[in-house]
Length: 396
Ligand SMILES: [Zn+2]
Image 1 (cartoon, rainbow, N blue to C red):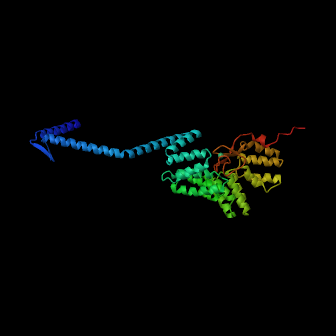
Image 2: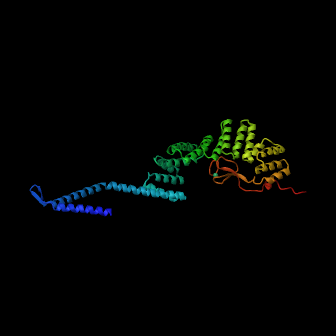
């Protein structure tokens, strides 16, 4: 409604103006040299208006012509960037789907369109890494690391690969330098922190790794290793205590504390560590350490009773009592405890991340490399009595 009114108003003004101009009296004469042109005033004004319009059109055409090459170049650049982005996204999808061949093809297309685009560099680096072409991967990630907004992705590509080269000291040192540079690009990255923990652990710097670790299980595992490799008894004890604090249910932590005290000559504290361990996390290794200095079977059975008293009724306690009683020829006692030891056998160390079983405790899983992932769990419940005790001798 308002628009119609405005249109009518403008039309009225223009018509008024035309009527006014058409009714203007007199003539306009133009003299140039020996020529003279005369026209009525409205016609002269109309001709002038047409001349102005032609001039404006001419200037516009010239400007458009001058701009054409730049506009064409911009259009071409936009086309290449869009094509590269589309190919990069297809490459990322293919990577996510595990289709390395398509990913490599799409990365190549992206590279043909925009070799310097950050997304192109990233997918080119990833696909080269997957194909085992580490020189090309490093070149792409190094170029990406220089990018203002995507620099961290470049560092990540460089650090991630080197951290896994556990046997290559030079690569691990490079990774450490690169990790430090990555930290400047993204100071509070959780991924980077975990990577630095892994790096320190891979370099055997367990104390450094334990200090950096935030996950209690990883911290405990690294503290145990730091205790085992400590330069002094004092440090070994401190790190073992840290391991117990971080993971109070982890038998190897108590074993580390026992070993550290034993090494420092604190026999009584060493024994206390085993008793505390048996109470919190009974494990055959703790019993083995506790009974190691005792050789006489009957004395071992008696010592086992002291240890088992720290956690009475626990299947591991009953299994220990059954084992030591049997060795001391106390068949009735052995039978009684074996009957109560249900669930104490068939346990092993299992990685919580990948389910791989391990015969003994390790700071990190041998298969997936996760630090502190091993837990003592029962994998096959078995009737203890048949495992612990020999078949009854036939009566003569
Ligand atoms: Zn694992």
